[in-house]
Image 1 (cartoon, rainbow, N blue to C red):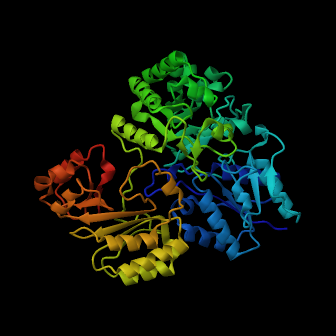
Image 2 (cartoon, helix red, strand yellow):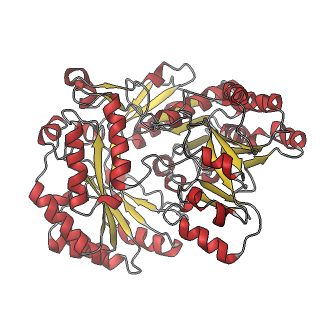
Length: 600
C-alpha cells in the first residue's frame, strides 16, 4: 500500500515572533529520517510541513496545505502549548477526508492522555517515537489493524538513529539555532519532570556525528548551536569532550546548553569558554531545602555559588531557573530565592516559571497529598498550595516585576504593517473595509496566527461582528488585536459586542496569562485605543479602561506630552519625523524598544 505522510509541529502562540524561531521540528526530522532508513517509506512519501506555514499560518492555511498534499497520514508533534490546536486541526482534517489517519506524539502525549478520547485520533506514540512511528507506518502499509498506542519496547539504540540534519531531512536556517542532541536520558529524578521517568539512564549518540554537524553549522551560518542534553555536565570525559568541541568549533559559533552549576570548576568553565559556550541554563528552582526535597532535587549552596562565579569569570551568561509555587515554598521563601539570585548578579537572565503539574509526573500524583491544586488543562499551572494561595501567587508575580523592573508577561503589541507577503498580519478597515474583508473571506488561508485590525468610528460594528464569527470558525487559533482609532474613549457597548464576537476563552494564550493582573483580562482578543489627544491619553495613566493606550506621535508631543512618554505607552509614529526627534524618542524608550513603533 502506498503511504504519504505529512508531519507538523506548531509553535507557541504569540503576537510577535519571540518564539517561532525556536520552533524547529527536530522530532519530526528524526521520525522522517528513521522512516526513510527503515525503508517503510521512500523520500517522496513523507514530508515535514514547511516552517513558514507552520510558524506563520493560521488554521486555514495549514488545512489548505494539507488538503493540497492529501496525505494518507498526518502526524502531530504535541506539546502543552499546541495540543488543543492539534486536536482542532485533526478534527477538521477528518472532516475533509475521513480516510486520513491521524497520529499524535511528543512530550505532551502519554498512554493515559485525554487526547485518546477524541474519536478523530487514530493512534498515539508515547515515549521515544522513532521505532514506534516506524511500527505504526508498517502496520498501515501492510493493511493491518492500527493499535491505539504505539510504544518502543525499550530505549532506542542511539547508534541506529540517523541525524535529520546529516540526512538533509532538516535544513538549518540562517536565523535559527541548530538543535543537536549528544545524549538522551537524565540521571536526576526531579518529580515535576516527565523526562527522567521515561529516560533515566543516559545514552549517547555516536561521536562521529559532531564533526559533520559543526561543519554544517559553519557552512549554513547558524547563529547558535543548542546542545539539547538535559544535563551536559554528566557527559563522560567532559573535559575531553569540551576540548573536542573546541577543535570542531573553529569559527566560534555561540553554544548554549543546560548544566548543573555545582559541577563547574574553574577548569571546566575555561574549557567551555574556549569551546564556544556563551550561555547556559541552570536550574536553581528554590533555596528552600524542604521544597527541593519534595520535588526530588538536591542542592549544594556553596558549590552553586562557586560554579556561577567560575562561569561569570569567563563571561558565560547564566540563565537561572526559578519555579514559582513549589510545595512548602512560602512567599518569604520565594523572595529569598529571588534575593539569592540577585546577590550573585544573575537577575538579568533569571527565568521564572510557574509550577506545572504535568500528567504522568510524580509531583502530579502527589499533588493532593501535598495540598496543591492546579489547572486540569495545559499549561497545568499550580493554582494554590498549602503555603501560597492564588492571591499570593499573583503577588509573587508583582514582586518579580518590582524587584527586577521587568514585565513578567511579554506585553501584547499590535502590528501596523504586514510582515510576510503570503499572510495577512494587519488589516486597516478605516477605508475600503468592504473590499478588504471580501478578500479575507474568499481567502481565509491568508490569515496569519496573529491579526491586528485597525478601525475608526466609520467602521461598522456589525461588519466587525461578522469578521469575528468568521475568524472563530475558520481560524480559531488566531490571536486578534482590535485597534480603535478615535479621539475619545471607545464606547463600552462596542467593546462588549466585539468581545462576544471575537473572544475565545479556552485558548492556551489566555491560560498562560492567568497570574497577570490586568483590566482587560483577555489575551486572545486585545483592545487598543489609538489617539493623539493628550488629555484622553493622560486619563489612561490614572483610570482603568478596558483598552490599552496607543499614543499617536505628533510634532508637539515631545514638548507637551513628555510626562506621558515617560510612562512608556505604546507609541505609533506613522508620519514623517525628523531624525533628531526619532533619536530623542529612542532615548526615552531605551529598554522599552518594542513599545516604540515606526511605521514605514
